[in-house]
Length: 336
Image (cartoon, rainbow, N blue to C red):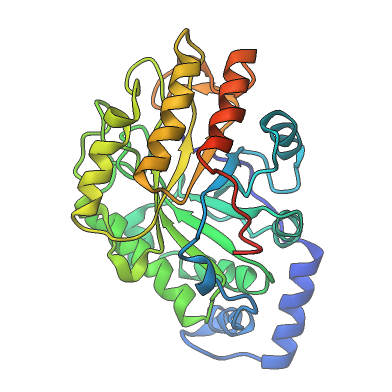
């Protein structure tokens, strides 16, 4: 359910860091011309190291919103209704946007692991793979490295979704893999150690029939697998049919921890039962967390407005509160 937002601007803090780094390091580095100077100035190794966070001991509970990290209302509302603060705050960022250092720092200080869905709406995966946007990727890597906290990063999520401009009807799996490796390689070359790489396909269902294995970059390039799937009017009446078949396919080629990176239950007569089924199924499957899409939004790939919020009824809210607690969802990454 990828969402684009308007192009951001560098914060004053990031501009200051870049300027100081330029003065200290001068021009040069890998590549040539202006790009080389930018790469060196923004390529300082990150101060934060995520290695201890890659194998969480508990199950996280998160919330996703298309608003920027600074717009904290979704977290406050979710906290009041769910009965506990989320451990993950997921948001979307369009390809070409600068990294919001201050906003992500704010989230991390409040106890939320920021998770950024980097959406290549106006970009070609083949072009990214060929290096056409290397200057942007180097700049983004430098901005993220300068942020003193962790970031879960998903690039081109739901790459198997035909409704996306980077999906099967517009790009080949090999293009996605090559683009992912290109981005990952630039981050690695610049010593970025504060990123958790999250590969996020949509579950295989009637709307997303593409095989997943060809889209997988490999365990060396992925830290978490992040599945996206919703209980709604077309697919998703039980965890066993919505998530389990895809989990079994992924087990054949990846041993990485699994996060349900986006999910929700549409309003219906069966919403309470579906919420109970989701949490119980997720706990049994051993996922490391679940991120809830707590909004009203069109069904993925369609125009049917659905209400995914946990507060659509007293029964739904009670089911969410009881089952999330009973299944042990609530894990602080700060203490993990």
